[in-house]
Image (cartoon, rainbow, N blue to C red; front, side):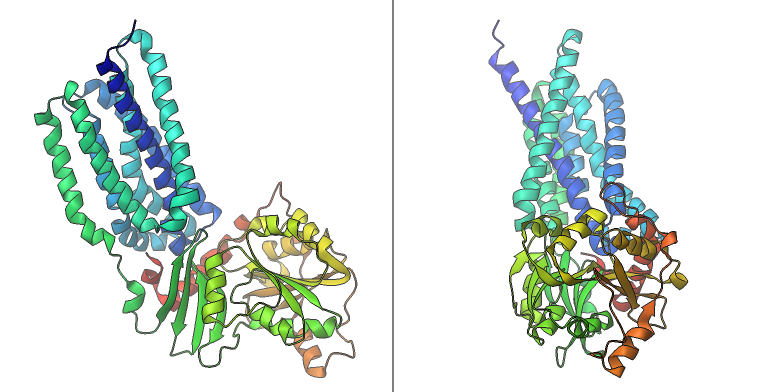
Length: 516
């Protein structure tokens, strides 16, 4: 027997509703990391918190929604969707105050609490939609299984489409704040549409007024939410010269005129620094690049993984060395060229290192890995497997130079020891140098080779020899673990480092500077 047209239309609008709200769940989840990352970083702890909060909120939404659907007499989907729209709309507005309020809780607890407060209200409301939709779709007890399965299947398909649309198209084109704003408005508009279709179950006089009130409130809030507080411009001691939200972070070029230096930052990590007056590099750890052509006079071709501001490639150019650069973030590459005077001498590669390295044939006389900043750790680039890929690109006399930020702890730091131990699995020889000898928290430069390097070599001047020997450190590898693609605890081992580095940056610019 054919179903009446009204029944078919009733199911179509219901399935469209759960499809769109399912997409909204994933948009909020994925964008949540981008709102949190500039303040707390884009570490595993941010992703863990956002995913956990999403699951907690949906579980509560399913439970509360199921109870409410059985008891509600005058409440329908439209009101729930309108509430979720309004709560989504205010997320960017509340982000600054919530992040500032949770700052004192530390990295892990601060991330979790801020995520819970910001995203769970809207996600709970979106979770409630499923049980209500199941009840509306079920005409008899016999069909409850099919109805529930269909509703949640369509919702899941919506989540998949929403994820793909956001990641592949929307996010590269539109800022996260604007997407949140658009999503909130879209949910409010959807609620008004649902009011019309729900008239078969609930009278318009009951469903329309609350939805209309919530929509009007949302409209009045839009001007407050649409224009973010420009915290950076209010500060007297620094000025933002360049700002771009990319797929990988919040890229900015920041001037500190009083101190005469310019920084290139991604979220809360500094990946380049130069003087404003002359443009010379001011990062101490990168000075060792001047000595590499002396330690290995036959260097002709180099690879820089983690281009940053490009200073190391420009230093190598002075020695006639052609350097291919590999940078994951096109916004970083743009900032380096426009604000730090970076001019490529070799191939410029934009992409993820693990993938792009497999496409390279080499050979290289020198490979520099400068991706381990004070922020989150790209742990997949510091495993036995990743280092073996780099080793395969080196000549027999080649050098791998790896920069790593950590505490020294008298050579007993477990993260530092793990890096040394992992390098030992791939390279027979290594030496470790500290950037600033009198400071415990530091940049450490590992030089890994197939051959022993002689710091007493006659090619080194007394000044260079003294500089290196003063910075040579011993690492107790017994304190570390071998890092592999299967198991790497590096991010866990670096919690103290991440919190300390973040505090340094916050002290430099202030907490409000990292709120969008």
